[in-house]
Length: 302
Image (cartoon, one colour):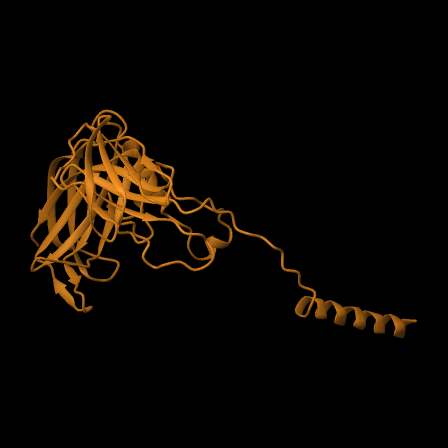
């Protein structure tokens, strides 16, 4: 009996292996849900820049599609304080600009409405241009820090005045050499020490900017500190010493803050245990983001 049992056991294991790796596989007919192609609006308008917006369209999650998803034949209307203002003009690759070089005004409300053949109409929520950040003073000390890349870096301290009410901020930097934008390294400091600033805000995956609310400052003057590498990398990958650094400090709309926050996705092993997340959108009838900001730029000569 024992011999017969062992034989049966081996036969069962062999059959199970055959099922797993052989032919016992059933393909379930499942089609991913899709609501059809829709317009995608991507626009961040700033009180210091001419209005522009990019219009593309969504595609099905399966199958083939064109690489260029831009929409060139759209009717793109800009509205101000509930009134039609002007139609934006297509320039190239889905970018639409104000032909009158219009820049939005602080405190005014703006909305974008888009229609195009073959797509449902789409429109944004109404967003307000916030105040410009109030910079009280700033100080830059060159070559007093070492960056995480083991490169000498300067320390920038900026004192800001927070307004009454809930405000949202975003900070990012650009390096220049001979008038050309260069890749550069910078890192965020808390109380003068390399630390994690996410207790008041968040850093995107590429650490290229810092977004935060005023929850930690409560309508008071506050300071941000940034370590800045004064050596950049040119397009060929060679190190260059920067001759200008632009520090852009923005006060942004709540929608832009939430959109940037939704861009943060789990990395590495965290992906296996993370729940699915959706990008924040304030577009009805389509997808994308319509956001407002007001930028104060500080220029540093290393």
